[in-house]
Length: 98
Image 1 (spheres, helix red, strand yellow):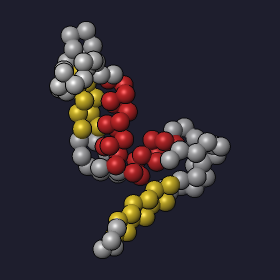
Image 2 (image 1 turned 135 degrees about the horizontal axis):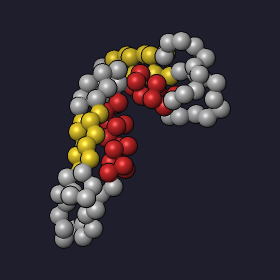
Image 3 (image 1 turned 180 degrees about the horizontal axis):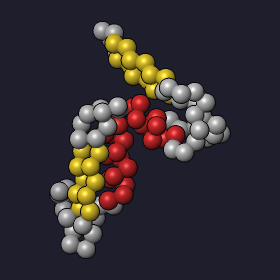
Image 4 (image 1 turned 90 degrees about the vertical axis):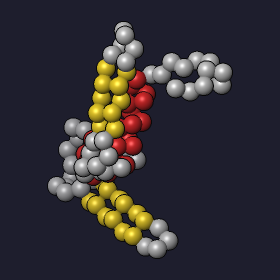
């Protein structure tokens, strides 16, 4: 818990935390993140783990929109100075998600 002197209001929103932790689970493939609210009137629990990493994130963002090609385009490269991981898929929608 955060220090009450520094953060007088320590009421967390479960849904806001769940959105952020879901994104972190997508970005860290294979890592399991568990969010549990133990407040008596609001008990709930969510687990996030995605073995496919950002490929699964692209699928999640696509939702019900029909893809224009079957496979998600996926690239991974490592160099001494940097690493890159890229996943994308075009769909029939007009909205972009990054």
